[in-house]
Length: 107
Image (cartoon, rainbow, N blue to C red; front, side, top):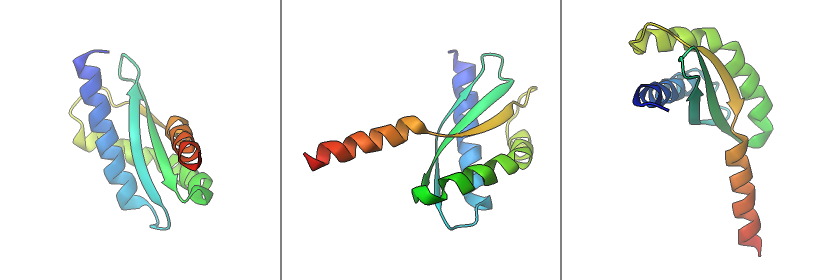
């Protein structure tokens, strides 16, 4: 991964966090945990966690419906020729880490 790709990932992560924080319905806490991009920066996947977990599915549906608006927000704030297609996923790695932490605390 080159420095350009890392910068783009960090900016997309920050902009996605701003957008989702502003647009969500305030019934759940959304945290953007990471972002990955393809080497040509044409595709980006934003990973997020949602608390409480019961709202996870609803928030993921909401975020996927807002992808077009998110892309426009990123287009206004990201100074690159190519604006990536945005996909949004639940960060399963973070969920697994939390479960492991919980299991370790109970022993």
